[in-house]
Image 1: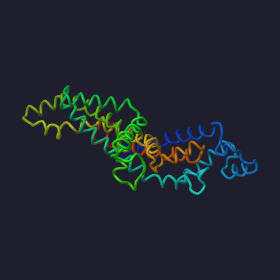
Image 2: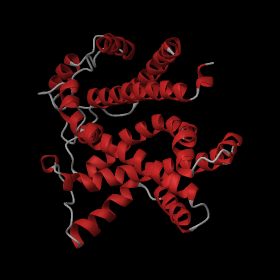
Image 3: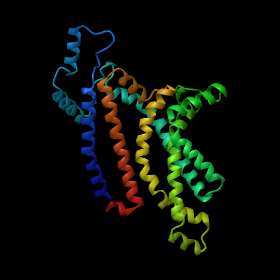
Length: 306
């Protein structure tokens, strides 16, 4: 298992380098810059700012300077918010993003797995049909459309929940953003669980266990759940990345003080440092999560190691 994890870790290094390189050059080659506003700066001031941020050097020199700083753990300065570095801004917003994303991740797994198991046990009956309708709605409707609908219904009309804000982490302020973020992943996980559970329950070893007199609940808990969760575990890595990137939109809609707020503002203001630093941070986090998922997958199915 250790050699498998090390091989997986080594394969992520070139992937990370390629992604960082692509993001760096795409941002720098795009027209415009962080100091090109509606009111142009005096040329002398603009030259001084470009020299301060190494923008007066060639693109290749800027690239190697950034890589050198990145290897030392420095994500660079923010071109717009000069009071805080990129790392400091990420550390400020990270707890809020992790709370919302973590709750949505846990909710997706718990509700998705339970709904998928229920759909497989009541196949082609009312619970299964209702689950199919829910899966279709969760996959088709994007979260930037679901969010204002829920805000309108539960926040403005029924007045059950606040429409936005952090509210010092109160549960009522977290219900809507966590629900919006988790909804599409609940649908995908329930669909994967249902399909895998139906296949497992019709396998030969389940028939053998049932012929020995084991109850359905014991069959489910001891023999069916673990192999049925294999496709779900393989989806958790992409699900984590979707949750992280989706949280950028959800945090903006609900006015949450997470990383999404800094990223959107940086993108609008062409803040190279903050945009690239956020992308690098998300890539590192996604790679770590995918590595964990690969290890768990190899534990569930030892054939993967070979």
